[in-house]
Image 1: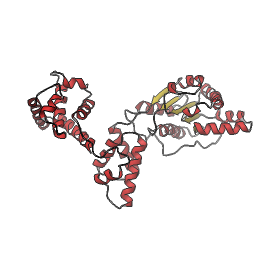
Image 2 (image 1 turned 180 degrees about the horizontal axis):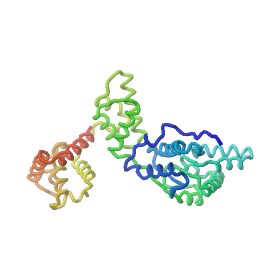
Image 3 (image 1 turned 120 degrees about the vertical axis):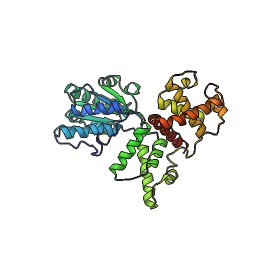
Image 4 (image 1 turned 135 degrees about the horizontal axis):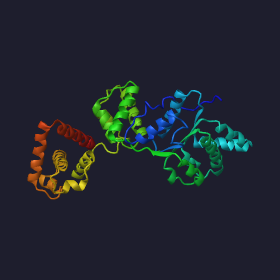
Length: 346
């Protein structure tokens, strides 16, 4: 049977950046694509919020299956389209034909299964299709905006089958992954942009991939229409609709959180009297950055670290400067944190 798989050929694994936010889902997807139906992830349920790459990933699976196995019958369909098709066949008294067609698919990819909610008869048909495909060693790939256990209005017998395989979530990409996404997008489109602008976009747009790419397209469009080179000033101007605030006040608390996240140190450790090297250096760097980026007095900065006095702050700042001159790794860490705080202030 020759059918159009309804896949976007641009949605590939090569174009899908891997990061901590999607590593499990992406690698599971690659396993499914390499051995459809003959793996532990059947069904593979990919879930997450809007714009995090669910459709890209599951279509990448379909495209990879077709590349490796041209004779495999692959079909991507949204749940809404599935429901509409079911209703049309139901009106024409051809439900059996509808179910039989779907039972012939080797790899069935259904997007946004949360819309099956309350579509009872469509769920009955999908239940029959699911059982047949699974028992026949065919592969099912599903997406949802939430975990199967949190889906309301979907029959429990379907939910129990969704839980047979693997449910993998997609999260908001971190700063480094967002930079890589932007750079990959620019390379694919043959575009060039100053590194500081890329970092500015990546730092300030942290909601989802779709909005990240939308900001890039908007910036490039304005640059082209106005015949102006892209710089940080233009980026700030045209991305006001994407970025919550172009000027933010940096507080000691903000810097403390950023340093704690960077070094994976608990906040309360910064306040304790400990001689552990990693804690002491994290605290010294935090004081150094607080002095550089806030208008607080040395006394106020010290008070934010368990009531230390201003001489401790002075000593910490001098120690950071000295270590930056002698320890290359320490210097690299401080400069990277300095840049992160600077971007947060833009």
